[in-house]
Image (cartoon, rainbow, N blue to C red; front, side):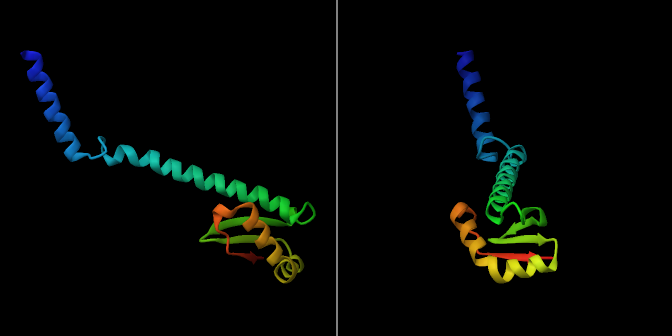
Length: 116
């Protein structure tokens, strides 16, 4: 009989904890793990973008360009010289966007902004 009462008290404590913490644990203990997973996914996407960028821009221009950020489907690229900036904006931009969209469709890349 005593074991049954303990089980009943434990169940009552479990139900109270479940009412207080629907996931079974306080949010403060869940949040760091969730945020770490989000951060890991963002870092992985950034590395994927950098690797693909190196491939599509080519070995001659790659050392003179650097991916700065990806925000809302816009890729921000730093360019080393005004001449290269002009070439990329006027001649290469549509091709680069198409290649990025083909190789990384999950990033939903809409455009590229080149900066000096």
